[in-house]
Amino acid sequence: MAGDLVNTLADLKEQEVIKIAKDRLSAGEEPLKILDDARKAMGIVGKRFADGQYFIPDLVYSGEILKAVTEIVKPKLTKVAETKRLGKVVFGTVAGDIHDIGKDIVVFMLDVSGFEVFDLGVDVPAQKFVDKIKESGAPIVGLSGFLTLAFDSMKQTVEAIKDAGLRDKVKVMIGGGQITDEVRKYTGADAFGKDAMAGVSLAKKWIGAG
Amino acid sequence: MPVIRDIPLSLEISEVLRREGLGGYSKVRPEIKSLITELLAGVKKAHLLEPAVAYEIYSITEMSQSQVSLEGNLVLQCSLLSSLLPQAKELAIAVCTIGPRLEKQVTDYTNRGEPLRGILLDGIGSAAVDSLTQEVCKFITGEASSRGYQASSPISPGMPGLPITEQWQLLEMVPAREIGVSLTPLAIMSPRKSTSMVIGIGPQMTTWTQAEVCGRCNLRRTCPYKVIPRRGGVVKRTDQRL
Image (cartoon, rainbow over all chains, first blue to last red; front, side, top):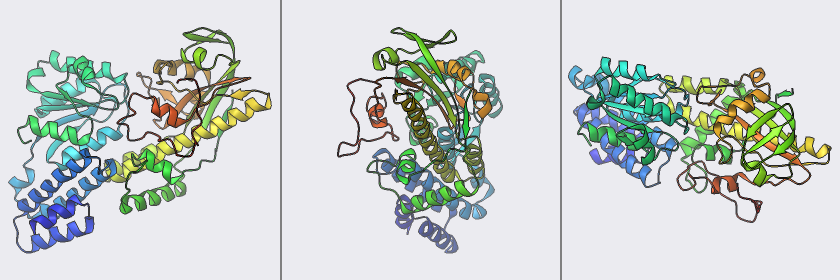
């Protein structure tokens, strides 16, 4: 039964996944076990994406199916289990850049993977990142930027975090169109993700869940 | 300065799929294909596309290795033109947009927890901008032809040899505000589904295909949106390197 949910979700068979989740819940199965299987399936989806078998729309589709499963089991979860998240992430597109689609995909994948994400939107001033890190206590920050001109803005944001005395308390990841390790070094970030799943993997690794 | 609106766009499914990162030999899931079809119908029904172009044609007064001087004491920093289009007599500057409505719908989908619809619609918007670019190029080519000239393929800021910071200059050279296009402090166009371009006009102009541009891009190995040359010699070769 567990294998059914894992493989069916990994194969992106939405209606079948929902039926299996409902049937298992009706049979009295522990809702957290169902969610755990769904997240195992996401691991397979991530591998297929990395291997080039799946593409960005498939990845987002898998996230929507996982979200649907979560909605089904949510009423049966205890309050503690419902609110338990892997960790907090502050995310946004840096000042001057207004591209949002890549950022939205990473935010969505982090959310369905169990993170509490504070999405600051696009064209986010460095100070707004600093304020949200202080307010939320998030240990992870994601900076998105699409064009090469955004690299300076990323660098300024990392410097603002440092000037606020928060650099040792957070890990910073960057991502966008043309990010390389050279860019990562230039901006002062800790790591870069080449796609949404890489961002999720980094976040999991940093909170010790990877 | 000329502004044209209501330009008919043809959105071919293959181009939409490429802009979804599903071009080339990618397998397309039936659920996703049917959602794209549904979204395309919705784009038409809700009039989400408002294509417009602002353009102007300037005479070239001088061309050096690094810049081009134009009538009205205007200067464009562009090292590509002297190597690629040395015979150009004029430059057409064009700024195009499909307007803000589609982007707003993308944001609405994302905010409603429907990111798949959001990213697919975003891809449709990108394909619409590509189609608009082609229409503008056809129009400029026709205009050049009526005066016995040829038109080159378009060069856009961000391509090697035309810095993206030249967007500031380009937007000053056409009535971009009339079509609602502006720049962020980082020279990013707003609405995002917009593009700007420079087209050489002269007695003998070089042309190239998008597949050739993609083939020479730094991201050619990994870019999911690249144009792959078709078999059978459809791609027109040039001796010039872009």
